[in-house]
Image 1 (cartoon, rainbow, N blue to C red):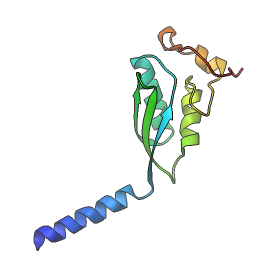
Image 2 (image 1 turned 30 degrees about the vertical axis):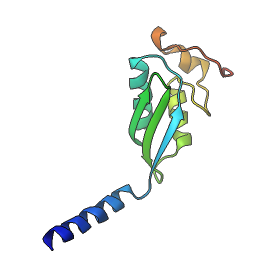
Image 3 (image 1 turned 60 degrees about the vertical axis):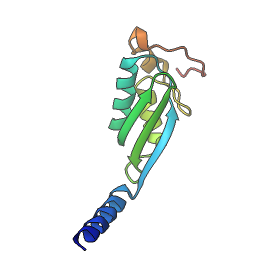
Image 4 (image 1 turned 90 degrees about the horizontal axis):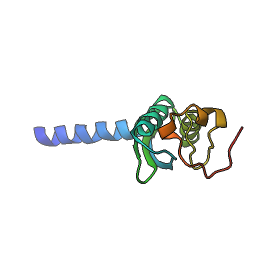
Length: 112
């Protein structure tokens, strides 16, 4: 009986913690390990609870509280850090501040 009650409480707590939690995958341009750190840091600063960018697939997997942020806010923060996303293009100024190894081939229309 004690184990049943403990299991019930664990399930209830897990449900409460994950309520309002969203996950998303965002395409983000970049090249290297430094890009990974910058992209993940920008996403977390914009409210992501977790952020993991893969340099081979160029995909950023994030989890976030939908009451605190959104994919739009996350993408804007990443673009402000110099990285183009699916829906946001980094300004030329932000892109120009990236280290040379991080300056990826830009295929999207560049913003001034």
